[in-house]
Image 1 (cartoon, helix red, strand yellow):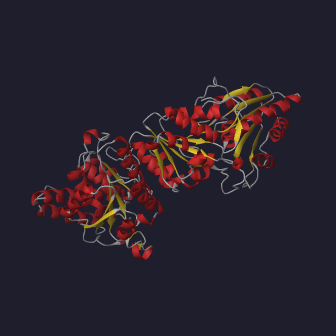
Image 2: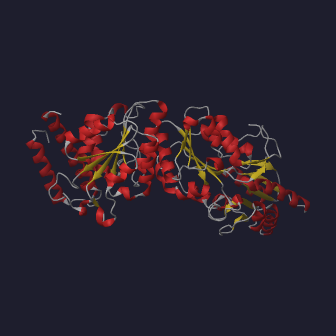
Length: 315
Length: 282
């Protein structure tokens, strides 16, 4: 891994790079459904062709085949777009991977509205919600290339099913080589006392930017990176709620079912405080350039800052 | 096979049928028809063909079996009990809340179950994964799976059929339990998938058609599959749904219905009489 802070790299590229970096383990098999140039598994394909399996455009078959490989001791990365992994192949993931708790890692790229021009049919905004309902499924949604690399490594070391969510869009690298990643642990990026901003994926830097906007208005915002959506880090959420008294979540996903829902569930049962959810508001996306789309759907620092003030006002 | 060997297999198969019916009767639910039609195939595989050991059920070099038509779990539990993987007395717990014998096979709970199945179409994909793993690891184990003839209406079966041929999985043998009936009636009336043999041939499979209840034919087909290189084999096994119980044979109604006490007693007496006629122990 050799990424520099500020360097713009898509998390899908970091996924592909990590598969090559850690791919010398003979247990690792990488599968793809005719999208290896887009999911970036083509690097692994070029390096370890004997352990790269293209299933053709058949995602359901890919997931169940991955399950069979896993019963024989393989660590399988099954890759496709989030829409066709979590969406089309849900039931194979649920019954053939989740139910027997097999060692399959679902590498889901092109998640979220930042897919851009392909439009709503390819902008998966439901996958976290879908995957979260499967017992025992780990869900990782890394924020940058460094975290993506570490998430792949953690997934290899973890015995069981993992859903890894990556984006198409090049995003700024925000972590350096000293960054520590642990499944199930949120990371405090900035301390604060008036409100907590919990972000995941490409909205993590937007949370940091929102905290700066709020600081300019005299509001102290805490920022937490929640790369693991499941199992969710309850402790860091409860502590933040108790110490700051208001929470905002931010994700490139429908507000129904994703990070916002996961955090709300923890708050409601443990430390109810005012909360606002930034995400798509139960609507489908549309074609367009990624950043204008993010702004149009309110997935940006400006919206996060505004929602923070609303949450604080509810205290 | 000599006649004594065949007799032994027939007796084992009758016991598998009895246990499948015991399970379904005790549970008051389950799938007797397809369990009885696939019983001889399972008996041949577990008693004559597959390299499996009840005491070392997870041996990485073992042969594998995936019941793609997972609803016929009563037959799978029957063969696993008959072969010593699970205690015979556990059969009657089938589908009950305090038993490990789930309605559909659970590999995490049952010694000898190689894959959790039940959702149709997925088992053959899983079997492909196992066969591919053998190829990647240079291992010589073989993988067997059993599909229902209704099951092949699932599109995933054909995705898997393409995959197995593309990756030349000649270590995979799939049985089609071709009893001609699915829940809603005859397969040709519900959704006509015939000619099934020609479809698999068009997908570059080697296809052999046999009588599913003739052990000599099962043996010949399994051996032919083992000698077939470069492509997977489908053994299209023409079977009788409900085979071995007079009033269940050829009746779609027995797909997913449990026998009542009287029907169960009659079925057991018919199978016992058959075992008697072969000189076996009941």
